[in-house]
Length: 266
Image (cartoon, rainbow, N blue to C red; front, side, top):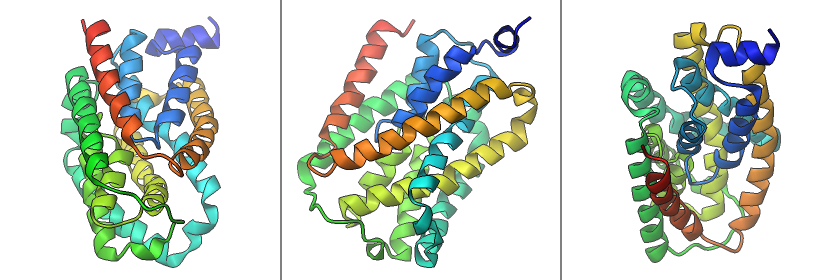
């Protein structure tokens, strides 16, 4: 039996599937469209078995995308003031995520209905937000973010424990609502993903390491591919928001929810 056959036999996940999911993760992780929702929907479209391994795989390959942020923003992580604000912002997310881990993993993650409703309502929220919020284009200035605002950003981010909400959308919209400029909150959201997803992946490894045993090939492919595509996605997103707002992402979320409901929900 080949390595590929062994992986498919044990998990229902081929290296080709891992490649596709890695690309999806890398492209969507930092856009306000929910990478978790896309991984769940693509997995469902590919008819992949909703196993514990697949759920853990979808969480852990996010580390590849997170590594891209570390590479691109390496020097800023050494800024003590920024680092402390990231810690403060992570606290409410960590507490809420830990408290609701069993609920999310057992009832929400993989629930297509929850994902579609979150995508739809989140898309409407983005459209309403852009209808009334005007953005001024400035360079990122993390001095705008006080410790109080950092804490509030963490609270907004915690809403994204609901699959389909989008961590990026929650932090960007929440940060904008409390007066942080667009470029600043987008880049802070990128950096905040690092401790958030490191914590989520560490918790997943601790609680479900048995489900991952012997599946290093699929995990490795997903990790590397998500890292490469995330770098391209981040650069593209930053270029996009220089001249455009988030309206297109709102319409995309709505369209995706409706199309998936009409053609894929069984």
